[in-house]
Image (cartoon, rainbow, N blue to C red; front, side, top):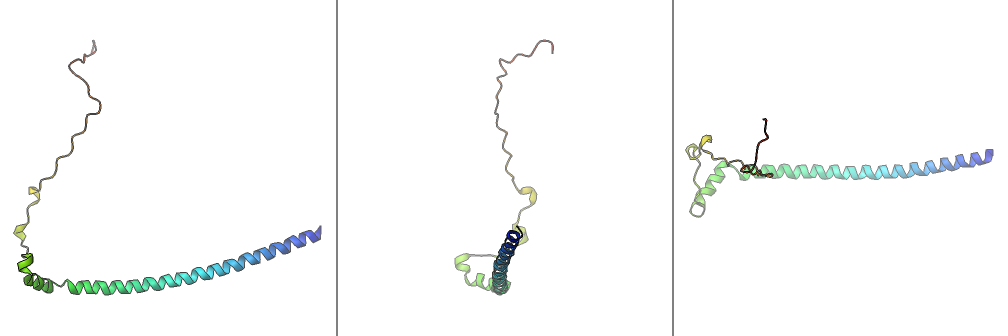
Length: 116
């Protein structure tokens, strides 16, 4: 009986060792993949910073003004002035929809109960 317990214990230890070995390599692979993802994220942040700087450079007000003047014949863009905007009370909002009648009652034949 003791030998059966010893064999089962030894098999359990071997099984646990095999499981720990596999988990160790799976963890190492996950850590490697995480490092690669972090590197990709850092590169993407760098590219995004460059794109934002380029966007800010391309959208300088003096550059846009010069482009609007060069292409005035084709685009006919004019500068905005505060008097071109309307007032809030001039905005016409749409009227809310009237609730649909789902259960109509014919009032011409409706008789009230006596005693009310």
